[in-house]
Length: 396
Image (cartoon, rainbow, N blue to C red; front, top):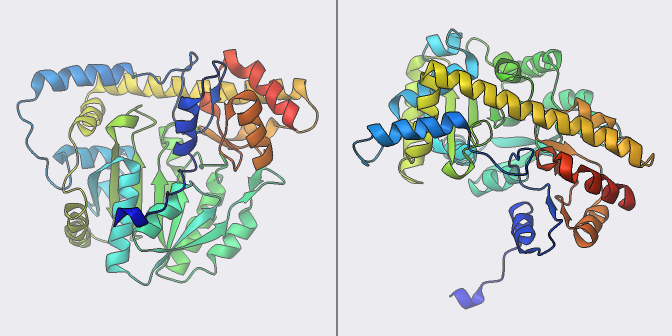
């Protein structure tokens, strides 16, 4: 049977990472996969994570299975981080949360849940969106459509076109929204724009699926949740896929959560029963270690404070690299103005580099960038900035 198979194309992002590892050139630079790097080019383990792991090692007494929805207190802690402990959604118990293998696992469970129970619903993704969004949703059986989002000419949000498109989405369809630090563009709606988006979503009867992978990496934990909280109006339903890969540095532990908000606590429990079936027939139950780290940190005041400081340090470094890159490019060339990068949020930016320019950077300079021009700003350092900007200036 397997002799009939044809090789599958490499993943657009992870395939480049594999090629980067095989590249023998010592001066190579990787700006592809979404992994935070510190000033020395390493992906650090946070101090709060190391301390939490010590406590887990000392206290654990069993390696038995978790429940289908994960560590019991994990869901409450996730909801309080997303909305704050006093938010109506938290206090009314009309939201339920499952611990999932990363944010990607949360998206896949959401896709399975939607396709199984609402088979006629389509899901609408921004144009552009994270490269894996369409693949995950299509694999779950959903039909994927797109709505306008980014204006490459102005390096800004196509807000009027976005609102016009939302007004045409049928009731009962699903819209995938990035809560903050939009991947791949780094361009987010303003609080006032979020209000208008929420108005249309509510009026049209569209179900929001909010992908929240970067809380704390934009402006701050509460500020980055502004869009989600605007969508979270009394009685409104929504789904949130959140991740702790970036803001806890737990990439290889695969720690995420899927939260479903219903109109009532009773309906939320009904939804949870259906979600558990989707999990049971997929991976049965989540792994413990990463979720245990997150729960340990969020429950301890001292560890929580350390974590918030460490996230602020990562956020400040990324913003510093944005400024340094834009300023350095301004010194190197007048062929393109990169000052817009200073105003974006998170790890990514849509650079405007063409596929041909990206290919030249990889072939001639050992600089790896996704072919659509998305760059991971967190992969830049003070040490590699001059060489990076010289190379980009040469291909413009």
